[in-house]
Image (tube, rainbow, N blue to C red; front, top):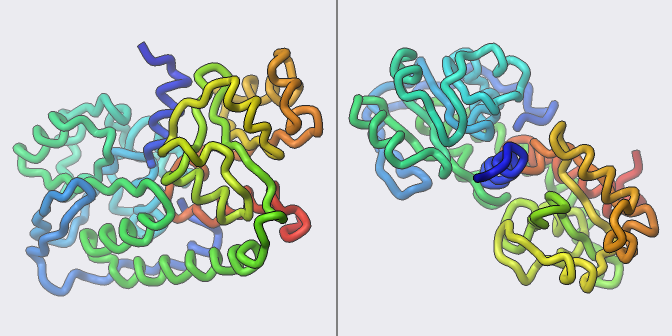
Length: 311
């Protein structure tokens, strides 16, 4: 049975968020021809018969994307985990990520529902059978974000805002990579993104966390693992990263303090612990690939290369 903390980590990891510069989105432009067919991230062709006026989001990442596209006024339902932007807290709650209240969703009479990979298949099929279009939008890494924004813009009639948002994100990310791409391998410290100190979940290769480490100018010591995975305590000690970064929320703050203070004997074997190079970052931008990618990348870059990104 998963603990609440573990469920929070897994949900956040797979979900797989608006930066201040993104606030200039205008009202969405209409879809030229209603009846558009759009392919979602599960490869399903979803028919969109009209411009949605009532939208339900079944993941925090999708909620953040919707608000970043200027569609917050159309969002009528969100999950219990949707906490950003603050306006999302005022929307009707339709349950958790994996335990969606189908009746509550139906009561909201949505024109489209944005789901994620953790949305149960039977939930999506039930809603679809009730006549509510279900579109799975589930970016897993940085390269997926642009596609997700384009798809959401096409589905909602906010294509112009989607184009604008992508341009803003790309410009801000380029300002970061212009600095870190010039680094040679010897200038890149080894980094471990560690999610907890009991199951030892880490960011391996081919995931959002790995992308952020590389963009920040670091080398991922867990790169031999694929996606988010567990890494043994012994392997962590053997890798001995220069820097350890922990995404932290209200549930994991104590776990972070434990590592930073070297509470357990094995922790004190790590150079990062002895050298004071264990850092916390806000977990939501790190775990939700979306419009807050710039916020996440800047936070990482300031840790990995403070000489390039001063406070």
